Amino acid sequence: MNEWFLFSLIFASITTVVVVTNWLHKKTNIKSETIRKFIHVCVGLVVSICPFIFKSNIQLILLSLLFIGLNSITIKFNLFQSINSTSRKSLGTIFFPFSILILSFFFWEKPISLILSVLVMTLADPLATIIGKNGLTTIIPWRDKKSRRGSLAMFGATLLIIMIGSDLLSRIYNASFYIPFPVLLACSLFTALLATLAESISFRGSDNLSVPIITFLSYEIFLINYTHETLTPLFFWIILSSITFIYSWYIKSLSTSGAISGYIIGIIIFGTGGWPWIIPLVFFFISSSFLSHLRHKEHAARNILQILANGGLGALFAITYFFYQFPPAIILYLGAIGAATADTWATEIGYYSKKKPKLIFSKNIVDRGVSGGVTILGYCASMSGAFIIGILGETILKMNDLLIPITIGGLVGSLTDSILGRFIQAQFKCTSCNAETEDRYHCGVKTEMIFGSKYIGNDMVNFINTIIGATVTYYLWMFNG
Image 1 (tube, rainbow, N blue to C red):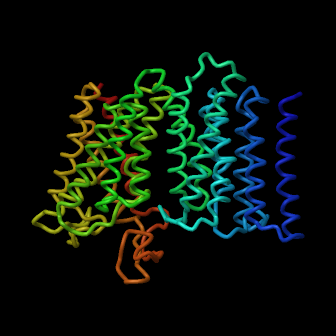
Image 2 (cartoon, rainbow, N blue to C red):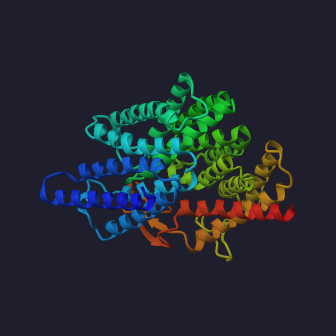
Image 3 (cartoon, one colour):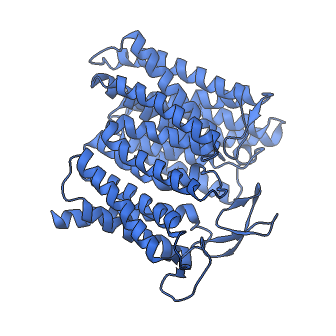
């Protein structure tokens, strides 16, 4: 059968299901959440068979793009109440096809891992929602309530899907080797743990993006470490990082979402690069935590957004190198970590400057901690932090000519942070205590913006800092080489 005919049939079928269920929603008392889950399962099952019926990823990529666009329109104009009118605001209908787009575009050549990731999102995720809906014990890892019963259901369902699915799909695809049962069990436990943790810190349907991506990465990382005979160091890191992040959460250096997201990022980076890649990130984390607590001043625990802002780009570079053996990813990774370190050191050490900071590009004196404020001591600290990352890169990763590029890249990134902080970064006012803050939430409530762009908050500024630092480092290294 012609593949484009199948594509048209799938598109028409999914559209029909959405239209019919929306009509049923209007004519009956079926809840929106029930219909939403039904559509979720139907679409997920259809997507999971696409690697069997399509020779290339073109059809699935196009299908994903179409539904990203269509679902965005339905949300914007409040169409299809059956899927968009639920008990909580959600962007899951956009995250769902976006996750499929990422998996099909970058990892089409790994069909077993792709299918298993889609099935976990399709079956385990809604099962966790259904079982955990009436759970008595609830927690809020980030912003959405989660129940322990739902998390256990997510873990158990993912475990079974990975174990049974791996065996069946290996036979269907005539895999070159079969995974021994103890290894398969360990792989399933590892994948289920990370998938469950990813689901626990989801917000407004973001689990439709995070769960399949994290499931895919954890499954692949475990199996590749198994084939490379490096599972022992990976197990050691899992235990060591568990202790580290639990302790950081206990002393309130990290919030629950910060500890979980940091744990996941750490495992991904260690699983993709081992000790040489994780040590620069560990140095950044330990030094920034130490400097933050050195002042003996109350600090808000770092949450998931702050963790992603400082370490998310580095994780992407580690993944890129792991799957595509892209050498520049090493330099970009060190540049991103160098910029994050430079910016943190500039803030924390610059606080001790005898002279008050001045707004960048001006002579206006401001209080310590004000966005856009800079000091000479802060500049020196910025360069020192990035310089040490350069030393670690040259020593551990055995790279040459990194000191100057990473030092300059970190400084430029830190200066960019200050520029954005002064002219563009959003500033907010707490509606509860009237304090001015950089955070969108304060005192447990949403704050009001009083200055800047609503799209450029402190976390976005920090993320841009790592992008600039990585880019400048890479081009200076290329020029120097």
